[in-house]
Length: 482
Ligand SMILES: Cc1cc2nc3c(=O)[nH]c(=O)nc-3n(C[C@H](O)[C@H](O)[C@H](O)COP(=O)(O)OP(=O)(O)OC[C@H]3O[C@@H](n4cnc5c(N)ncnc54)[C@H](O)[C@@H]3O)c2cc1C
Image 1 (cartoon, rainbow, N blue to C red):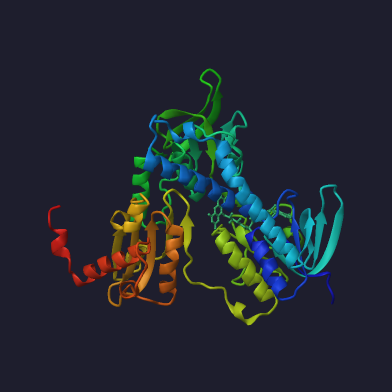
Image 2: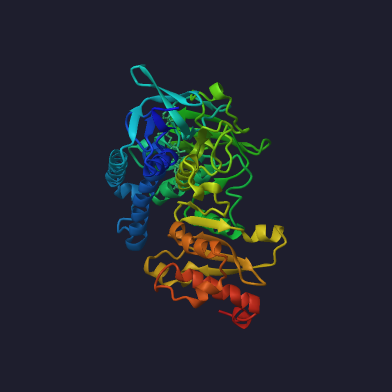
């Protein structure tokens, strides 16, 4: 049987793009279908990872400048810097990235079709362009990577359209003085700290009783201390009743209770960000034509090589969740391609612990077992800590808020988990990740020469700290008065 393509990919985000790149390296004929006529590269480039990280980088520079040199007139960052300055920082980054992706697609002879992709049968995809014209192509494999969209409030009464989501907040033309964020997930926390760095007074209204419960408790405590220091208010068990506009006071109002029986409270705010989660983009892509299964969250169910129940149809990225990260999507798209075309290396997807980073200010990154999880599993584990205030590099950068924590087995010092709160945590985690994946021990950090002054030195300090705890040495120092 001959087909028009070896693989047709619906959606050009990280999962689709990496599936295309890997397939073309196997000399396969590839078509990417993308619904957006403005950009290619998915929400990764247009609405998610890169624009939010560019905004963060600009906010971080402004905050560093402000905290290191202050302002002689006592102005807030939003009085000194305008959204236009931030856009001027962000736009070239996005344009560059878009250009680079287009070049990669052209250079690797990947075909593209602009329009809405839909599965017709297990080997046929239909694309409807903006004019409503339809084309169909046959293909040996289909890779679905249509991503996800922001969840919209359903039970909430909103009397105007000024509520932003995590995509429209990137179009703000000014820095708000006050921001109320509904939601407490990673995106909510990132935007809370980004706007706080710009001088905005931020309130986080969380329906949940806990925020980021999957993090190591000490790392959460460190984050919440930074919230307090920076005046970010975090309220839990919130039931939002109404969002309305107050004409007289020229502001938005959020009416809520803390707990169902709590008293009714109102906060005034200039802008509201509704960041209560994502939903997979499954509508209108033809899943019903093949009865492809989804889980209770609407995400596609795939096996460990990212194949659905229909052997010719694979899926990856936010469509399958639950990691919802560009980092994981890249790997999934590549592994799916490797499996489609029978390359041996794809026999199994890696089940090793996966790192993640939260690009709050400061950053958070984590991999492996937390101290609490090690305890729950009955593992005799010890921890070692390094505080950034004791690191020369952090001192030089005025980045002394931070903690690196190692969790390791007491009996053989094998590294089980790394948890970091502090600048560069997202990068820093990978040194520990490598040692962990090679079944290494904390002795690696003690024995090896690490560059100085660097943030990586925190590994050495934490390893010594942990070893002292195992050997019960250094206690006399702890008992000394300051
Ligand atoms: C604010 C924010 C910050 C983030 N920060 C990070 C971060 O720091 N690190 C990280 O790893 N991840 C981050 N993410 C997550 C990351 O952006 C997503 O996990 C990733 O983009 C998902 O990739 P994907 O390939 O599944 O789909 P997407 O990137 O969502 O792309 C899907 C594409 O499919 C297209 N499409 C949809 N339906 C169709 C159709 N029927 N036909 C044709 N095309 C279609 C869409 O137009 C879109 O271009 C962030 C996300 C957000 C929102």
